[in-house]
Image (spheres, rainbow, N blue to C red):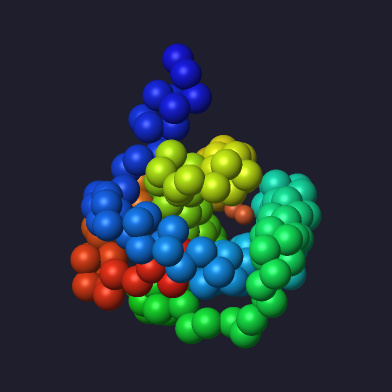
Length: 203
Ligand SMILES: [Fe+2]
Ligand SMILES: [Fe+2]
């Protein structure tokens, strides 16, 4: 099975595909996309660091996420390089409506395992959506160098998606994780449906 087929099965459980107009307007706003993307990578690294610090007593999580921090920070560095090459400054962080909306769905309380599951599923979802967007960018934009870069990131974020989902399934009851994952997927589709389509944002 090709990488593409196997990930389609594993990953594109996303319930709402990205509006096909997004990639065209994103290509016209590539400076904004690169800046927003840089901060997505920074947030991905920061989020893994927070999980390690707050859930230090889950050795499997520490083992899995420690190398992911380095990978996400490596992505940040590479996006900054692409900005530099094109003569664009990093710019300031932007408000991430998508992530704000997703974090409102995190269930408070319950056991530590339940809390951790919420964070892992939210992260898995962000990875899955990012992967879908990188795929669109890698297939459709004209800049050859960025095409290759986005393809590589699509593969890397797909791996992170699997890391988060598998961690959740090993830390908490598998059936409960799967049921909650379906709720997260439905919620994410709703968030995306109500979010303004912007070509200056990764999400
Ligand atoms: Fe990344
Ligand atoms: Fe990632």
